[in-house]
Image 1 (spheres, rainbow, N blue to C red):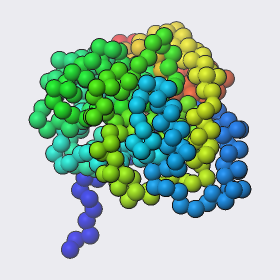
Image 2 (cartoon, one colour):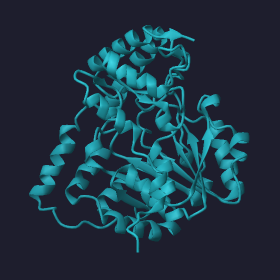
Image 3 (cartoon, rainbow, N blue to C red):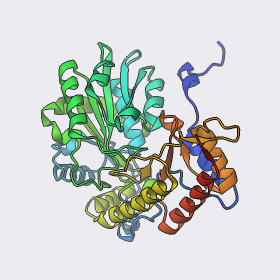
Length: 387
């Protein structure tokens, strides 16, 4: 038999985000505004719990789905945000990445349609392809990154299995409006598909009002699956801790996929996760909001159109009005490549998120680094011709 690979992998590409982050790292003196990673270190009280757990000898296999204490803490945390999930409906995962992998591997079959509003994090498309499902993109770029019911309805059919919602959204920082959520709810109710809520940025919101899909439509709890992570609000990206919460009938299958994928998350980090859920993230949120304001003000001075982010720590300005050296439209990938080489600042092209003509700026770094990066970006933009 030939030594072949899974042919589904032939449709995947390496992460463009990591590609530009690597190019920045290889360029001396380059400021990288690429990765969505808080510049802060995990708070000391959370880190101290790991040492305490190790002293207590918590180095053995934990329960597959997470310790009872952590699952209870997650259930309580969600209840405080209007989400009714029992501890038995929670699985502690290796970050939101594994949570999404577990969910999609559980519910998707070959040939199923999986709707992804774009721009979107590249992970969704890749996992769907590994499952041999059909990623169906809903382009929101002409609708201020909101979901128009008519456009979504045109994509829904007999093979539609699920849609994924990320609010606030990576890469735009957009918060989905009540109208966007209502459009999804009406079609999910009518056509019986799952709604996966990627809520990893829900604690980093700057809008006056914010309500997610799951808490807005409790009557659709039988088809709503929630994903969350400790990475962003608690500056715990390297810990690889997250969770999923799902309807009770799905739990046996989800638990089995999770068990065979990673068995369980690391035992001696789980008390620290309990500590994190009880901590105050408001200082982080306020800091990210200040950096958001700094970024938007700089982009306005540069003349780069940008929907004002209402959450997360990204901005997604348009570079469609800028010209390359030959006078043609520069394009996002060419813009980012030249910005690294000529200005020493690294961004991520919107093509990595399925949206040409835009670039993503991560403002998660410290303020001084961010300001210098934006100063370099302004100088680079100023050197380009306008179309």
